[in-house]
Length: 324
Image (tube, rainbow, N blue to C red):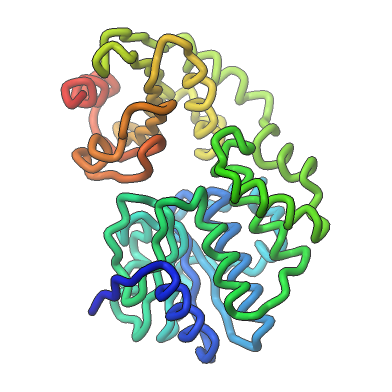
């Protein structure tokens, strides 16, 4: 499989050229999907359907779609991964590496045209066309550029899905660049109910979530000397604490932990199944987290990255601390 490295505008044109003539397209989102990957996938799928293209959309892994994301327009059309056929043109959205597609990665490798649309700086480009821009706040921003390049008018359904990616990946615009605010304004002008979707995607949790957060905060440890005195705070969400919740409900814990004034870096260790951990890292402004994530087999952005790990809580934490 050859790889095309091109300036962003050339990559954008190449993506639009392939998609505009493709009779059928497979759109793939990453495992444990968030609003950016699902919103991006739904938006581009709907734009292609408007062009008369046959589209199948799915995400990797056995987990169900999070409740909030299942409310997005078009989510009912998402296929179970086992039902995906795989067309000659495959689009992967918001996948920092091909491994984030798990078993569906085979569809990328066998495709005639594999298009990677992503904003993670750790993405080395695993498609035949790679539209990867680390300066974008979210993949939804890049998908919007493709929809515009295709000449498709953004309707309310597409706008809602684009807004979902923007509002979540910018932390409700707390760390969004000016362009994200402009995109959001454009989507709101189309008719998106910003209040509803911000509340649904970011500020709605079941009562059991409070107990999980309480246990996580009780486990928090502050190491002020870490990162050359910039400080590290970490917390643990073990399997017992998260068992009553779906996996995505533990994702928000890191945004609570990161408010610690004495720490530049916040880390949350989340045990999805016994002995299997997802490690989420966040930095405020000064520490580049990508090298740490990559060293542990993960990836992400300078200020938001992560990786997977195995072992007991003590082992996983100890291994991480040894690397920083």
